[in-house]
Length: 312
Ligand code: ASP
Image 1 (tube, rainbow, N blue to C red):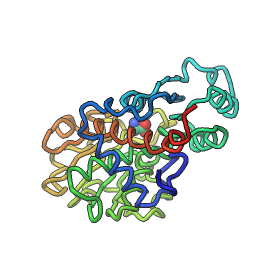
Image 2 (cartoon, protein in one colour):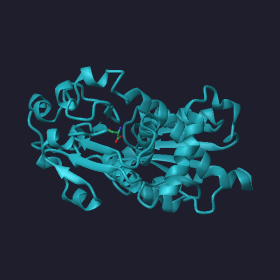
Image 3 (tube, rainbow, N blue to C red):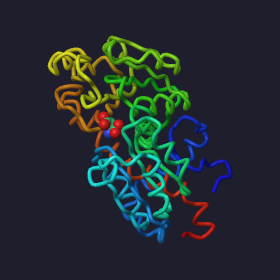
């Protein structure tokens, strides 16, 4: 276990470029492995996935990752938990801690909630998305996907487009890609473009066509209607006309530009099906596959100390 490895994975913020590289390199060894069960590194450990917000691919991916490494994986969903009965975050943390999990994977609707729980528990915590703050494993799986397709991250022009205001995916990706010396451009309607992003070392555009000019990677973001009180976007049809990634629009990017989307997609809104389903350009299903590899690497790295000292 590297001496400088963080105890938790709460965000990309705070990770050094060499730590990011290390996670990607470790994930690489699982990326092609058909049957990683041959190495039950987490055998005897209990992994609790506590999801206080809906999820399909992230939850499934963490579950598969844990099981492939031999962990006992338990999923806790908010709908059936005491959170819906009014339990406070601190009570939830104390309860999770009392279960003596060896590793906790947490998704929560409030920014900072996962960090707060991490302070109160005795095991490593992985942030599976907290509000509009961070989604570190998504950025890591995106980086692994890009690196495998393009060979490197440094020097690439990456355009991140769409609902930047609510996107933890965008935030984590900006932090990671700028740390790895990629050129990051962001583009959103003025109502969905937070001023704080400009301080993160990215070029901000309110015209998507300009932003994707010559881009090596075009990363589309979901319009997060569940986080909008209303009035932030026009009709889905109008949004698609100005902000949807269509074949015509993609022609402005580099000829071999990679198209990405973290899912779930609003087809016909932020992305046209003809682009999303184009096997030549779209890396969307590869992103899902890399998600398992990255999460295996993170689970392995964060539990190495415990395993060395004897699992509970
Ligand atoms: N699945 C990603 C997330 O949890 C992206 C999204 O929901 O749009 O943040």
